[in-house]
Image (cartoon, rainbow, N blue to C red; front, side, top):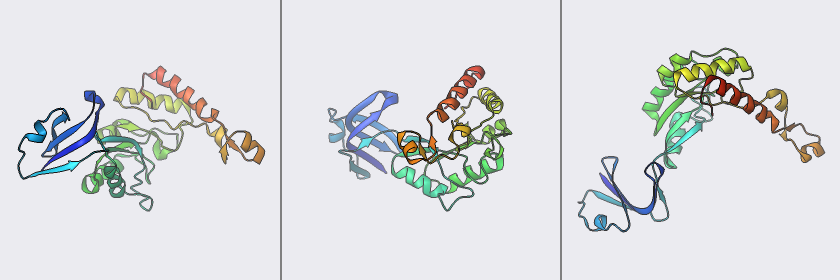
Length: 237
């Protein structure tokens, strides 16, 4: 089947394209991109197998990538599954999602990563890229076997939702990540400053007598991680 997507706003930063025009899709791949000034698409006979889609008012773009998704599988399927999460992603233009390791068990061992990838192949609607856990159990203490997880398919590491509070552990993680050529996605939060918070810290939290979350709780951790990234030559997000 072939598709002619007409009159859409075509956005492709990689090719520096930003125009209103038409896109011809053949066998699941983009065959031609034309702006409205090119009349060849309007006059060329494409055959009976062509489905025309009017995209006026819509955007035509390469598939989006979600760097931070909670697919929750395995272990918390009552919240989300790989099937439901990737189906929702596909409906709004995301063709790749990065699955965070806040699962039970987390992506801290090869078997779990392989399970995620296998389920994604069987039930997923888009590409799933697993993010490995930095530490075992996302507990912030002992590093996972990062090289094995990269070999299994992890493209980055994070203790998503949990900070790596020990600077020495984070330094070692960044060092290994630099050697493996993958980034660290850090949850930047100093728990000694944010513990027990009920709302953002400010005049209102003080007036209500509620414990606040100060911006410094994140800024302190961000400053530390930037310094460690510079020390190790690692990429950090």
